[in-house]
Amino acid sequence: VVVVVVVHMVAVVLLVVRIVAVVVIVVHIVVVLLVADIVAVVIVVGKAALVVFVVATVVVVDIVAVVVVVAVVVVVHI
Image (tube, rainbow, N blue to C red; front, top):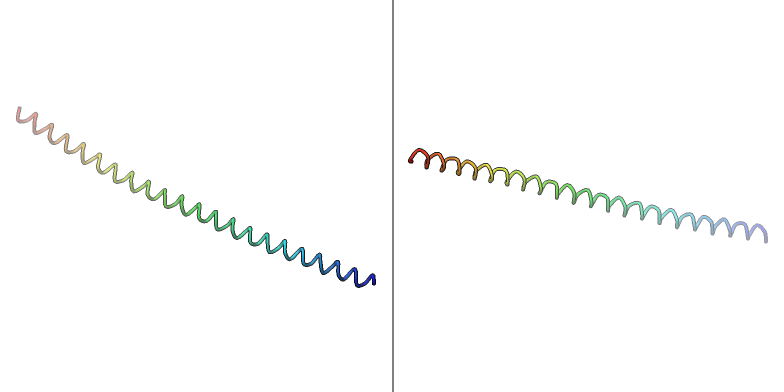
């Protein structure tokens, strides 16, 4: 009887350990995926911000160049 109880307890403990292990693994995978998603989003946003910054810089430089050219032309004509 004692042997049966011990075997049963061991089986239950093993089952619990397996369940915990599976839960830990699943949680770990989910966390890794979430972190990966967050990193991916940050990278995408970073790239978008960089593109916007570059485009804005080019546009501003173009505008400044146009203004300077117009100013020079106006001054020369005066």
